[in-house]
Image 1 (cartoon, rainbow, N blue to C red):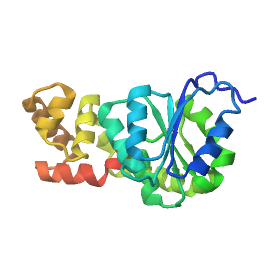
Image 2: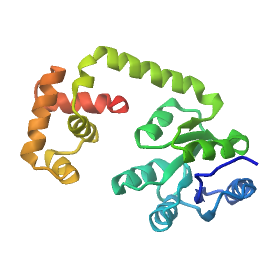
Image 3: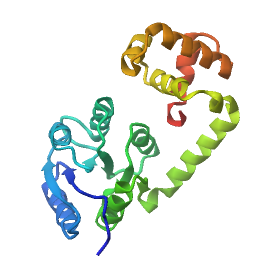
Length: 220
């Protein structure tokens, strides 16, 4: 039996009951998994995660009320510790990147989920990332773009941890006031960080910095 010492609890969210039950039965074959519940839409999934705090949540990308990406975004704002496995029927690089940008730990195709789910859950529970093998070209593409970004903007590594956090929040179109509230610093301090980031990256003006951050949010 697969060892999953770090797995304590899990929920599944998918609007197709037959598929959802199939995954549930597969997961329950491993006695190390504690199944906490299931949801048929994104809102139910969000409530389950917030209230039950599972270690791992398996979310369908295309769900009613709130889709998987919207749930991810809300969980990120709430700073939950649940690791998210995203399920999808579509081989779309844009969605693949969006899922990881918003904090997903895994991206699994539904047509291979039966074969992949146990290994995926084990990997994610250990803090590792997982993708369906059929999507490996997306990962290669993402890694290549990351490398190109770091080569083109070598000074990105000169940013302090706080400057990096500020830049990441700028990429989410947040104002200085929003950033100050999230990081528990003054708006004046945020503006100073903006100024320092601009100098280090040779980007002049808040609009130019915001444009840069949004366009490169996948690599920050």
